[in-house]
Image (cartoon, rainbow, N blue to C red; front, side, top):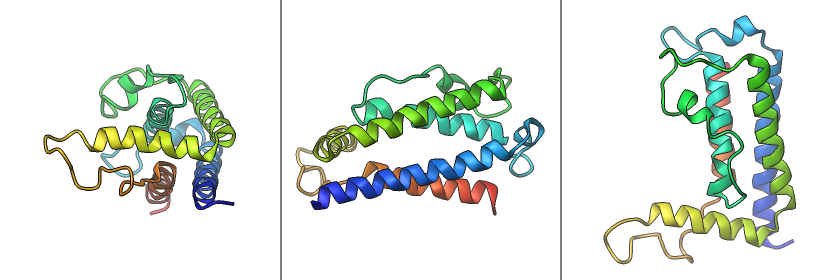
Length: 167
């Protein structure tokens, strides 16, 4: 197995494990527990769940995997803070969105060729990172800029889950 294929497989496995951990947490909570704040004055668990769903949904176009499934979630869970009066979807509907988005992401990850995934990630991330006025921004050449979007996302996702629920 090549280094790129191995890196992509590790990233996909990390992502899958992070989603699995979150599934266990969210599925074990009652509706009342989901409506509780993670700490006094902080976001509610249901809001964090919706936010993660919306952010995962945003990965489809970022990684070149197609259109988003639920862009309407951005207005509630990304553009607006929690408790601003926005009507949250019912728990069952949010669970359906979560399962749909993460199920499709994981199946897309599994069927993508390693080179295509890395190339798509590099193209999209480089385009966002390298929108500066200087002609040769540091780290923006294809050779030097090798971000592992999924690995970083899974690490951040795992960090958020750990600190939001266990600390």
